[in-house]
Length: 147
Image (cartoon, rainbow, N blue to C red; front, side, top):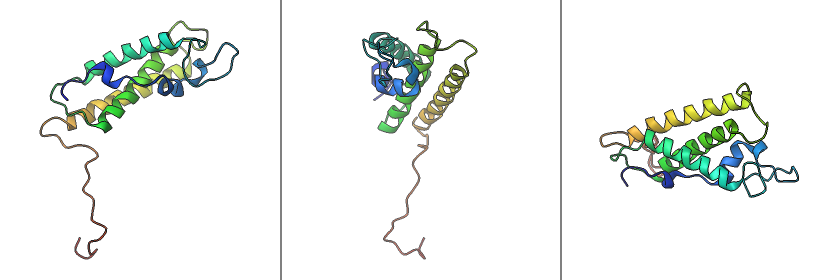
């Protein structure tokens, strides 16, 4: 696949909403679990934050030599969703959070941890790297005494 494009790791609005549910309230104050034209921020505003987060994550792990398998892409989408949720929480939408808000601090920590894990995992997918989940499995049909 080569260098990862931000569009390849853009998460769904549902995935972002799952990380920051309090921002997915409709005009009546009901939690909807995603971003729509009725939420604050709107779907368009949340998408812009997700695109910004995807560009950031892509730049952090965008080596053209990395083999981007489905597991690594999913890990990247999770990191982008967390970063987008952080950007939304830090944005100017409502008074849900402030810089002192513990949830914002937690989102920042989660985002950093996910990006570090993604960088480490992506290095394992470079030529000569060892994929972190490639653990040989013993054949169940084999004789346990032979193992």
